[in-house]
Amino acid sequence: MNYSLSAFQTGVKPLENFIEIIKNTKELYSRIRTLEITQQPEVPLLQDTKNLLSNNLEASNRIFEYNSIIISLYGLLESFVESLIKEYIEVLSSEIADYKDLPETIINNHYELSAVLINNLSQPKYKDVTTKEVIVSNLYGCLNNGGGKYTVNADAYTDHSANIRQSSLNEFFSKVGIKNVTSLVLQDDKFSGFLEEHGFDKQKPFEVLNDLAERRNRISHGSSVGVILDINELGRYVRYINQLVIVLNKVVSEKTIPYILKNGIGITKLDNIIDVFNDNILCLTLSDIKVKVGDVILFVVRRKRKGTVETANADANTGEIEHTATKTMDVTIVEIENDTAVAMVDVAKRAIEAAAVETASGIEASIPESEVPEQQDFLYRSCQILSIQINRVDYEDVKIEDESKNVGLRLDCNIKKNYEFYHVRKRRMQQTKTVK
Image (cartoon, rainbow, N blue to C red):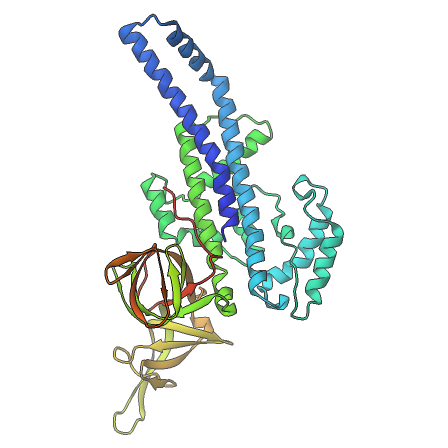
């Protein structure tokens, strides 16, 4: 998912340049004033330049610049969020052949939101985007597709009345089944690292987002802007929103991974893992595959968490149960099936399960779903290949055909050997690296 992020970063670049020009103007004026005081030069061109810079730095101009930056930055953010919602739906639609297999929330909201979209077609944001006839036709096609081609009215999910704040951002993405998206953002190590590195309050990680919406609201409605931000602080706001956008794009992209893996087109599972070094170098044996720097690697993490299970001690000779107890222990969730979570419990450290089946890798035990924390049981992540090495020689790309080779892939994220890894032959999920 690249389009939304690329469009935002293309739009934000002129804004960053504008801020730099203002900062450079202030710096140049300061240098001329210092030169004037210390050396008192009588150069007409220098005097004219100083007067011009002085006029540009007047309070009225600062307010205009402040308003322009706030409105532009917020507008870019809002456009990105709306575009990301649409792109998410479009990616799912391309991966899921049958409409009824889309996330339930998208299906449940489709009819009502499409009706709202028809009523809102007169709004400027929807001008020349779609028509009532197309919306109705798409709805009919979805309800009667019979496993064939369908088109979701993705624009219907972009309607919102509230400014983009933390709460409204969560509400916005919940319409497509992504709950608590800001909590997912906070789980990203790069986002938390960015906050710390740039001096943002980690106890109020979305304070800048909320404040941007409030300032934009005041400007748009002609209210008093209050204390304006200086140009350096505005630059920090731009960097924050840029980082937030990058992580949002990553979070939403990773929500498509289960569907991409289920589809399987363009996906190769990497089975022969040798080891992981330095937390980001994947050493493995590859055969019949072509990989290149920049390719996407998907990986699945089976998370360990606390679960309540019934345990028992058995007599070694008779096999009779001596006593049972309920213990809280670390379990690795393997799968959820109906109302039961199947877990693997380490037999060497724990008592044998009363109703469990011993296997080579441990004990398979049934845990009531009510006892499992309400979190996803698998984490789906993606990263890019930064470098490829074979026999200590670096390659930009390699094509392995006749015989298998041991290869080292340096990735842009931390990994562990027990993850499940997949190579994406299509570059549909290529990410943009974090910009600091």
